[in-house]
Image 1 (cartoon, rainbow, N blue to C red):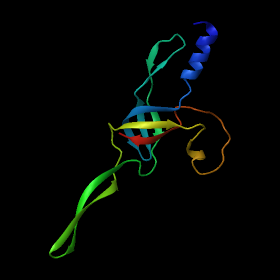
Image 2 (cartoon, one colour):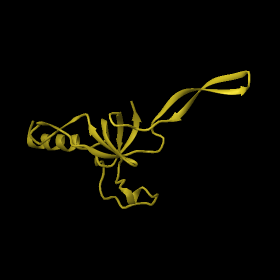
Image 3 (cartoon, rainbow, N blue to C red):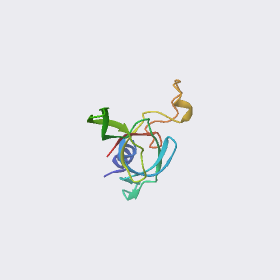
Image 4 (cartoon, one colour):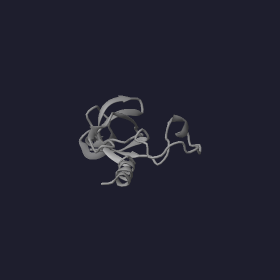
Length: 129
């Protein structure tokens, strides 16, 4: 592979779009996530990625629960409902990387000046496995 091909390959591999990670800590609506993928440096050496902060949307994790409720003194009924469940340390998550900056000032619904793009630090948890 020549220099130009290596340069293009390194740029492409560093465009972040989505990844699988493991939650290592939680603070409010932000989770510290360890990406479960390697990155490559310019020499092609695999390196472990550093943990990143990912935004936790409301109600990202749900579970089904059977509940029994009493209709009358002699009759009760059981049904299955979906209830919110807390994200916990050790959860495996699928994170999407925003096309643009989603830092705190940009999450308020205002149009922001594009300062960066496809940065792994602009991740949002999309699903929990």
